[in-house]
Length: 152
Image (cartoon, rainbow, N blue to C red; front, side):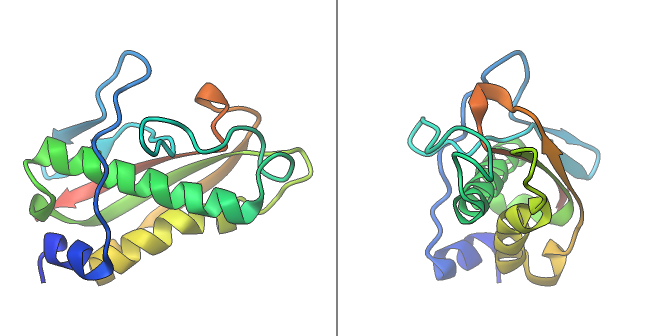
């Protein structure tokens, strides 16, 4: 099954590629890999929430925002690669969680990204990963995710 078919089966419509908020490109192809810049959980051109996870943002909400980040990364990678069906799988996910000092559930938050990529790519969605707590992210976003995809 193609990636496009799987997205349709899951009822997932990829968003428009988010415009960069600084001096970088959303994604870049190098060899047989597609690297994405860190993606924020923009939906409709805006962040759905700001603040620290474990304080202003719940872990459950942040997990959903990580899912949105992954879909934004997929859209950016597909745009750079020439279409979603040019993507073969997921190699690595990097997740950053703006965390209240007492919050230690970063892996659970970034599962939002990992799980949706697994649903879309199946076995080819298995990846290595980092889930890191940080004091602040751009625009006071609660999460940021970058992904390295393989080409088909």
